[in-house]
Image 1 (cartoon, rainbow, N blue to C red):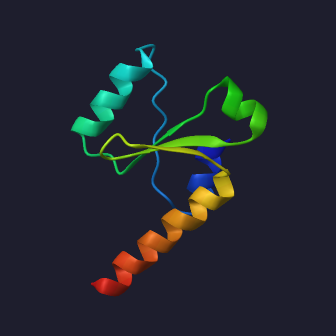
Image 2: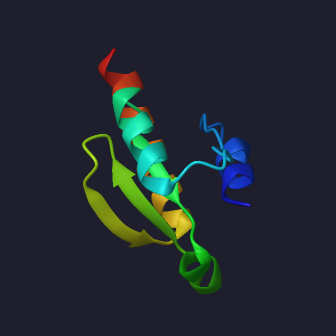
Length: 83
């Protein structure tokens, strides 16, 4: 559902559905310099939130998906206007 929301807003996203451990997936994403990792666990799904980690692996906590999308769109707009 979160992927579909991101895609609908024009934000590039991927779903990592491999059967690897979560820690492994996070390390791989950090190596690839993925700007944000969104983790949706059972608790997040029940509460309607997403857990966000930035490129450095810093856990930014649980956010409402709409709030996260608004933040990313703002960052994209700022980068476009800087060019």
